[in-house]
Structures are given as structure tokens and as C-alpha cells.
Amino acid sequence: LPIAVASMVLAVPGAILTEASLSFLGFGDPFAPTWGKMLHEAQERGAYKALAMWYILPPGFAITFLCVAFVFVGHALDEIVNPRLRRRR
Image 1: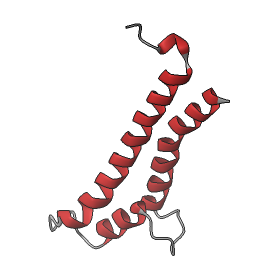
Image 2: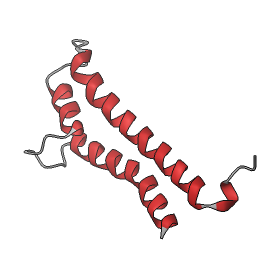
Image 3: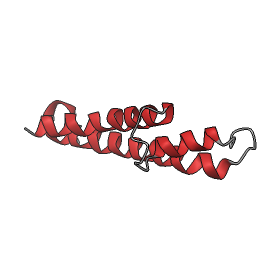
Image 4: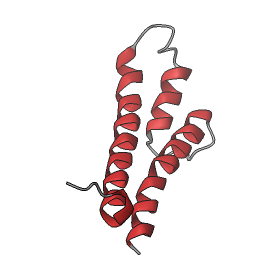
């Protein structure tokens, strides 16, 4: 069971990136406020051409930091529950 929890935590970044990618491409729920939808709206309204980074950077950083946080937590849990990964001191 603990290995399943660590594996599930490591699978969360893939789900986050999949949802953000689908929303960015326009396949997500049009009424749900997601980071992918925010990036899609910024791209549709020309934020990239106008160099309006305040529309692009916050959702991009949020996606990146959340995925990295889940990866760190997953690796920490994996190291705790898997005795072969523990370091000897």
C-alpha cells in the first residue's frame, strides 16, 4: 500500500500536464478556470506577440512548481517506503 501511494503521487504531475495541455489546445471545459485555459486565452489575445509576460508567466510557473513539488514529494515517499533506496549512514 505505501508503494502505491508513492506511485500515485508520482503520477499526479502527468495528470496536471495532460489537463493543462488539453485545456491549452481547446479541448477542456470552456467554463472551468484552469491554467491551461489561461495560457490559451493569453495566446488567443496576442500576449505572446505583445510580450505581455504577466499573462503567460504566472500559470506557467504555477504548473511547473506544482509538478516539481509533487515529484519531490513522490521521491521522498518512495525513499521512505522502499528500503533499498534508503542511504546508510
